[in-house]
Length: 217
Image (cartoon, rainbow, N blue to C red; front, top):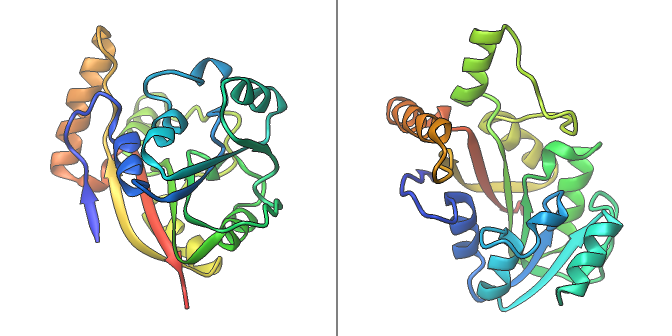
């Protein structure tokens, strides 16, 4: 199944979709700090949203600073490297939001996250779309893409499917997610309109993608 999310939810389509997939379930949120202390407690912070929708929620974060701040705020968080951790528990849903592009060994990450899934559990992966229109435009205009220096490797749907398969996972659904507009920002409004036009012509040009996987038997 492939879907394109097009409604302008204030939380952003990614957070809204992930929250809906985690409703009433036992959830492990990996990389839950989202890289910045300032994100903790914001209205569109995914982990905070999941706290209100999941039945139970455990976070995993590699940054000691982020773990400390999240624990102060009352969240259950484990400090661990997701590529090699063993929590001794299994979950209905494991969320890896905007994480895979940051790690050293993406196959090790997916294989280890699979170990934390229940038999019929689901792994949710969201990541920038390497063939999205924004990257293509930057290449045409600047002659190159200026990537996030913390990223190691980007995916499109084809390569993400392949690495999931190698990890023993079965892709069940792929969603193409549009640019999230920021209020009172003229540049953001322009990007938002260009994004909607690009996705109307070619949905696979969306700037972000999300894949839902099960365990391949």
